[in-house]
Image (cartoon, rainbow, N blue to C red; front, side):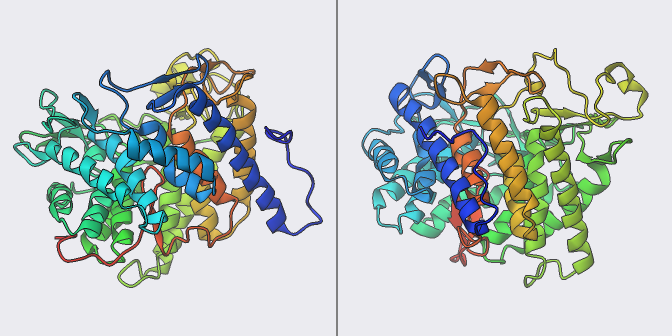
Amino acid sequence: MPNHLGEHISDLSNEDDSALWAERRQVVRDVVRDGWSRYRRDAWGSDEYKPISHTGHNLTSAGGVGFGIVDALDLFLMLDLKTEYEDALSWTLNELTFELDDSYSVFETTIRVLGGLLSAYHMMGEKEPRLLHKAEDLASRLAGAFNTDSGIPSSKINLKTRYPFLDISTNSLSEVGTLQLEFRYLSQLTGNMTYARLVNHCMDFLAEKEPENSVYPLNIDIHSGAMFGTFLSIGARADSFYEYLLKQWLQSNGTDDRALKMHHRSTQGIEKRLIEYTPESNLLYVSDWDGMYSTHSMEHLACFYAGHLSLSYLYAHGEGFWRDQIRAEHDLRIGEALGETCYQSYHRTKTGLGPDRMMFRSNDRWNDNVQNGSDPDFIFDQHDTTDRSSYRLRPETIESFFLLWRATGDNVWRERGWEVFQSILRSTKLSDGGYATVRNVDVFPPSHDDITETFFYAETLKYLYLLFGPTDLFPLDRYVFTTEAHPLPIFTPKEGVLV
């Protein structure tokens, strides 16, 4: 482990900026190698790593489905970590099986495993066909989840029997609307349009059900096809649906006009319905709505939206896109303002890390009983023991810093990313190695929970590496990143991919 890891970098002010960012990028690479070595030693093949007890954990009793390893394949390729990649590839090709007699999340398995296989296959220059065979094997099993009365997938699938889990009749907006990039790309590669047809049916359904303000309820009955609920959010159960509207248009090389129109309408609806400001400093946030009132709170997950609007701005001049410079710049300003709020949610805590749910001060009477603490905008509770105050190694703020930097060229987002990275190293790294969830971000020294989510490697560290890298490293005019940060190529769809 290098001595400089976790400490501020040496002063390179007299050297070219590229040397500064190259050294910072190397620190990220060192962290990946260090953390991965613990997983390799203690939990090889397991879905998740428990860094305190030094053990692995699978999500079901039937065995791991590759979350821990497949989710990191393209990271190793991106960082040129040859040994780590070869070990992970060997396990994936020779030990990973989907003949598992248990129910698995269709959404999580798609974004982590199917996306990981497809991205690695592409990044290998399509030289490892066994990765594609694995991907199609998995997708053919996941396809069974769509065998419902409505064609809307069940949230879970038995991978061995290929039967959907029908006892739970409700699926969520994000779980139905965040399968399209992976399934469509698989159809593009294989010529088998079954996968695209299944997820395109979901888009047909969502377009038909689009509410007047384009902000959807979160729940879908897989039997009747009814959408229901009054809670509105761009956080859990909704976030990646909105993310994929724009990204479906990008992936299709600007040909999926319907997704683009839905993206346009949703950004306007979210601004009108959910955006709020703190009374003291005028910090912008995207509040949840409980059906009657604003909750004056926002999940860390919703920080993706700052980068989402920045990515939209990047393509504002594309054929068939905004063509409205005023509107495009307005959206970028919202993205920058939200990025500022997400940054401040980190900068103002004792650990330098942001909470899983931000609570904001407001002038609403109902909020009087929680107006404690000294921060003028946020409500931090040092005694809170719920997940609300935890930092779960999430990527969304870093992801948005990356996209804001690519959209604006402003190095302030890179510097903020470096600041957050230092806080991650200071507050999540355990004394005997590994990185763990922080229980309360406003308590230092922190205490930890015994879990390292796979998205710490697949997303958080990957986006940090990209943030500190050059702009031609996975350029955004050639790649679209899935919600699990797996880069997939932009392509002109074959007949049947969009229809």
